[in-house]
Image 1 (tube, rainbow, N blue to C red):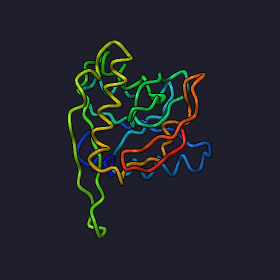
Image 2: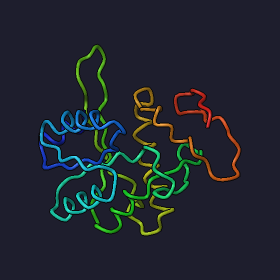
Image 3: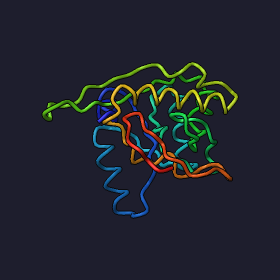
Length: 181
């Protein structure tokens, strides 16, 4: 919903992870781009497209709370548990000086629609030290999740990959649910 809200109001480029099935990829792009979003795949070409949009002063959207490939991430705390965290967003923020804003759409009761929320990301998100900036990004996400934990997409499985040598633990989510990590 946030994608549709933004693309209806701004020139907007959104990164997404293409599914393995080509037909599904075409459907996803068609539905997400129906109000004008320029879709950028989460690969080298997509990063170039996002960089060009940022240089033009346009708005871009990156979902920072999905687990990246191991080479595209670092381990840092997410709800006090090590999580493989993307480096891309904090690196882009540091390189471009772009203002980072968090946003989410809250489903309203009785299918009454959505309420859109925005907040400034933690200041350290654009720090050149990737450990500090990735942690600040996770803190920004945590702040949004705490606003409405029941609607967070916990199925993103942020804790599937753990640092080498770590033991599997149970993550006690913000909503009290136990999730194996």
